[in-house]
Length: 371
Image 1: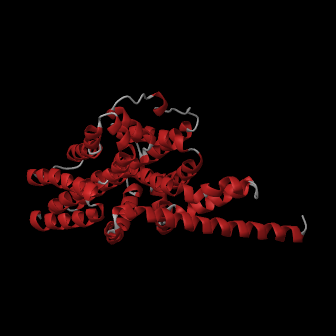
Image 2 (image 1 turned 30 degrees about the vertical axis):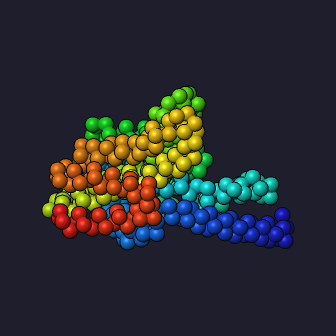
């Protein structure tokens, strides 16, 4: 190819790269606008906690690196990081691949250009991998020799990002299998855990697809809601992932500062109430969409009551899991949490614009009174 031809190809690639980058920014902006359902104050709350979340992110990476004394805990922390990364990238997948114009792009550029831009935007979007890279650059040679598993962990972060884009089914299978691995009562070194992760995710690529929604007959309110959550599992996945993050953070903080257990209990309760009661936003929308159908079948009142059941059940499961695996909560706070969750459900249903404000005020009052 002549120099003129090479320059022409490079100019075309740069133009395509600029187009994809602009499309990426536009879709990310639209994604952020969807958070307005939780109110501006909700974003302010998360924004104010951003510094603490970043510090916990690097603290967790330190636990993964220095996990020779507690390899299972380090493997569980690594699994949690991979899960949270997968959730974040799944939310950004449409922006990364520019799905809205994907078919059009295939008609104007080569397929390898599409994948190359996908990988570039994947690197740009993967804050978890970038944080690991920052830590890796600061490690000395002796530290690398003591933590060879961290290299595999970073390879897993990149590999799972690729799976998220092109093989999401294998990603889900792999996360399930590796979760079983880190929960087994075995004692192996960190390097063996991460090798096991790689093997299990590699095997997951070859497993056949399995769909439960096609086998489910919707003939009652229970199966109606079950079918909804199977087909829209994302509304549960991101909440469960964030709750797991809260649980792991509280576990780490309790280990470091057991004297602040009362404060951590209130914070954990606040986030459990927040993430479980916010499920009502999704259930409420579904109720509005199908209420005429159930009214025509004389089930209007039952359907109205049923929209609150998923949030209530989710809260009870979350609270039970916290009490069983993380820490105990005083009876007074435990009792108040039930009333608080009920209040947040009511606000989400009747006054959604005030949802975050009520949550923040209640959190502040409980911190002031109970700690």
